[in-house]
Length: 466
Ligand code: G3I
Image 1 (spheres, rainbow, N blue to C red):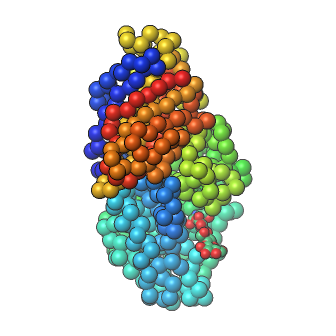
Image 2: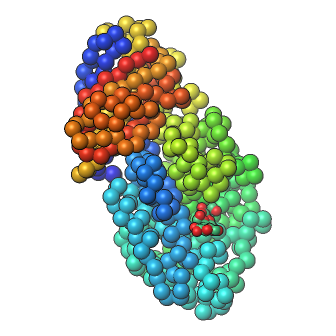
Image 3: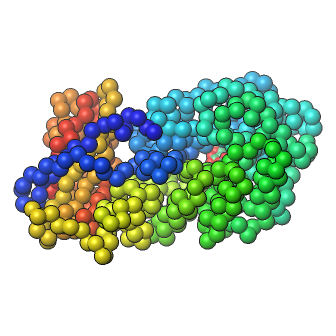
């Protein structure tokens, strides 16, 4: 998995509110990022990336820290890669491959054959000329990216929303076999890439469109048409809500002998309701062995194609939302302090609380009721900069606030902080909780992070509890 992050040392010391330092030994902590937590369950956790946002430091910092799979939101579509027939422009999309390599992320390719976002020259084509142009596009693009793409959306959104049949399009009018022709062409171009059919409104098992796609995949498997995976876009809102049979849908497709991937997840809403649905989607994927991973369709709410529905895991300022914590918890990550008897399953409805039957074992040196906390720092450093992810853990009493102190080496400076307020940028810097993460249940954890220039800070920190 992502090499840079996981090889870094994790050390911490804590300062009790009463003023006593407690040294923690390095230990196997639960994962603190989406990608790392998913990887521990054998899954990836990805995001759609808009390449022009990489210059936004908040966006880029979250991308680098949290995700181990990326999909170009628009830059690998047909109009972007082949603006003039047989003249390919890979420059922008190649930057995504570079970034993915830097952060150790897989790449999902999106998308090779689609009725939408066709360049003008393709929109006006038909018949054999269009079929050949489609196949040439697939061959040229997959050859360019051979060995660099984990899964390709070979065909996107080819089914009609209403009746379970095919959507009318210039591609469909070239003949009903255009989809299998696309998959056969794709297999020949890059035999190692997983080949996916990707669509929306295919999440509810009882919907006609779901059945239409299912029957096509079943037919392809029966006839040996090469197909490896089915992508479920899963854009959920009140018109297309998360269905109670979602897990059934994923499992039924997997039972056909294909992998399933959640490819464009966003869930409109807010607060606990949204968080619960996000957690349920993760649990559904984990329940289906062949569910490879989940991609959310953007990073912050403001990056979303449906921004007004606030459907993503980070708010517009880059702070993780309750939905983020629900996803991390569902993967067994360390948002909540796992109870010793049930290390992977914090309660989804109350992710910050220890199990009532196991309220936490007070350490002999920390009498129950005395507020205390520890801060554990994981540092990802490179030549000239670093990202520090800090896990704040409450002792045997609940916190209503916390402040973590860290000392930066000479020449180092904090350039960006998330989920905490920094006082100062160099030397001795303190980080105080923001509104949503000051309250931490006994034995539970929360986290914040900061990015900086220069050498990484010492992993020796203090934590003052309130
Ligand atoms: O960048 C230009 C800007 O320069 C110009 O001023 C502006 C004027 O319209 O357009 C901007 O480009 C827009 C682009 O998003 C970037 O924001 C395009 O018009 C707009 O069409 C494009 O929308 C994308 C949409 O696909 C197109 O079909 C969305 O970003 C993208 O999130 C969305 O993604 C699709 C998946 O590919 C397939 N599944 C559904 C999903 C959501 O619609």
